[in-house]
Image (tube, rainbow, N blue to C red):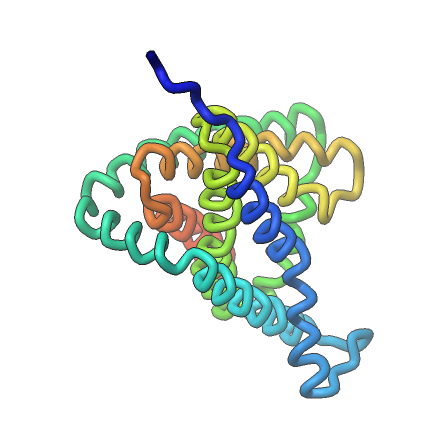
Length: 231
């Protein structure tokens, strides 16, 4: 008799919820250097904002590593032992996600006469302040925290393949839009961001190691930031 598939793991849901809220409220970690150095929140420069963002991401990454330390170490070994296969799978799914992202972005931007996503505008502004720190922060650190939260955390909570991929993509896309949206139409940008999130979720589902999706997420972000810096 076939064992009934588990759609939701209560233990995983609790852990996933905790790390999601840690991610969502991670900006409060910025208060640590603000208090230590007696910074005026109303007079922060753009460079200081980038440095505070990098600080909060580093603190969050350390906490996430401590929570998932055993899994992360095991999955790193799995990633190294099947490196070429994991990268091959990662590239294939990333290209599919990138294709959907680009097509949907073109339709939203030009056919519907919407401008650049507000989240993208905010990132571009931060890149202009401290480009190379943003390369490290958004290109290397953020992919690690986001993949652990939206892929590993969601996989723990939702063992079912399609439920995991769908929810991971939807929430990942929504969090890149709702926190900086200026119009209800901005919700359409959940589609391109969600497509990329679905690709990363498929990579993790297929390879069984979070480092496969982290690698592709890093590659994606780093390329975009380098293009913004150099062009």
